[in-house]
Image 1 (tube, rainbow, N blue to C red):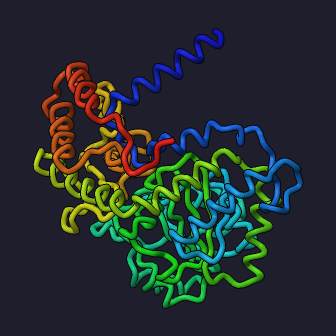
Image 2: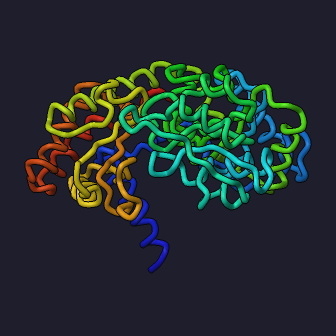
Image 3: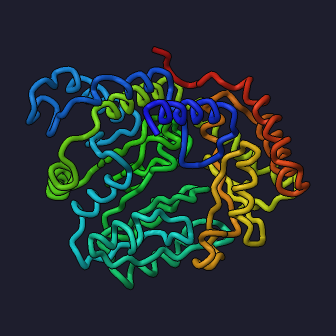
Length: 410
């Protein structure tokens, strides 16, 4: 093995991705401008601390970039405080836990079987902090948190922190209703829906009572892999604790080239975010409708399938692993997913599949393309056509969708 082998694998990945239909709900593609920023010399710099107050010299340019990025995020989310330093959404969540809670405190979050993120769980970052994790009551028919049962639970367990947000995130969570019935700090993990919030097409957590919002920056928000933490109306003591938890608590240096990419993407969202978010949701709703018409069971049909970028297929049997692997042979990239009614022991071969439309929207696809994608699913999974034959068709189809929309060129 050598440099040439590594280069070859990278080039193969780049070429292959351009000929796939990628429906993984946690991925996206950056603009040429953001990609240029990510590959810039900022990747070689250290800049511990705040802009203009660094522990290293030579930061005069990254300071200005980081401040401009903060400014764009303030405009997008109307936050009191923005921190672009977390290197992932998970790190942002860890900082939140360490800043706002103490070991033994009770938090309420969503169970992973109901779509919650692993960092919210007792076996994840919340458990690492030593927190007593109590799960939200969940309405499987509505695919959402049960508001009335949650209010009753709050009175029983007296949580320190209530954390909204999920990995399977079809509908806005009842943040306003629950925040009005609790003295706990309301937090919101917007990892999946940050771009939809920026485009003003999803709930605004800060307006509904959240005081802290964490997120990753590479899902519906189409930036580089990374994280962000923002606050609104958080008291001074907790604010100071969160700042300490980020630096020096969880991090020393942060990834400056990714900060530059986040900053550019934020300005793209100020320019194009509303149109992009609207089309992403339209595409998801159309994909849900078309999948149903082609013989698939899509959860939450009674509620229009989704109000986000995601839809969820229920295969009614444990074939999620087979379905995802077979689709990949046809250059259709997906991921299997547990459904709330699946036993946890079936996590490697669940009955569900989560699909996201954000990346295909980013390259210009609209409702008619979603209908065609649903037909491809039918031919591969229901009609059992040869995936290799479908792969040729997918590759040819993708030739017309190579330009990245809703973003800046360099």
